[in-house]
Image 1: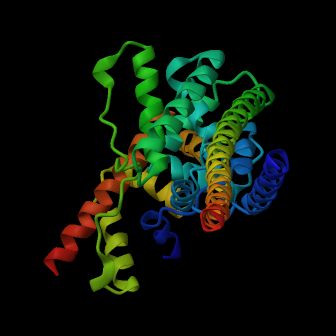
Image 2: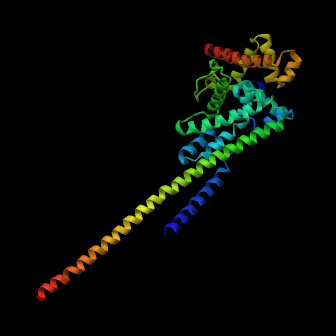
Image 3: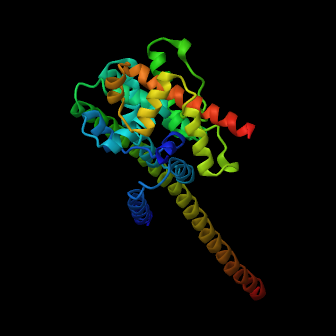
Length: 129
Length: 208
């Protein structure tokens, strides 16, 4: 009776390692059932297993997987580095703007300060006259 | 001042990147959906890399099935990944697994110029023959009894294959050996048998 549940349940997804063992013919009875159960449930798994069985050897297959993953990692990291660089560049412009504003403020302060200091001098000259 | 600020900034971002990478090493228990949410939040392609790597082997198998050439299959998976990275940045996908499968199949059909086989890309494509049964109104014992009785109503080939596969847990090859059916027949009888069983049980449930 408990086996009847197998018909209703989708069962757990097999690991990649279990799938490789299945392709090599070394999977345990439990792993084999898990994979074949998924194959009967999912077209994705069925197509994948049927295709993987066409590889010359599991080593060749693994080699292809490694190559694809290596390229993928390179691609996704590259995009991230570009983002990081552009992020830094964006922040640099913010920094430059802040510095320019600060310099303008300082310059403004000195201009005002100098003009204020020069006014009393003119006044005293006029008084002396 | 400018250069020292830039150095501190790079140092800060590098420390952040280091902690992010440490966090990402613990991704095995993260679901596909969570990885996509993390990508949306961080806008970091590394999350997509982690997600796509989960399906490299399966997609390679799918492309190999249709293209029948190892090198072409490898190139096809790389193309699918590039497309996926671009599309996932623009659109939200609810079920990445089925979405990737559809993209890979369509890519292969395009390569084979068999455009009639193209299927519409919907991330909600059902990979599984999802249960049409609602057992909530029934207790487990009752539903299993219904199922047991329904097996008897299947045709002989389906009944034999379903019984050998699900109840006796025989492998496809063992079923082929004991019945004389081809692999294609065994798979078809199991798949159709399961579907018919669900229909039969659903029918009985609605009657009672």
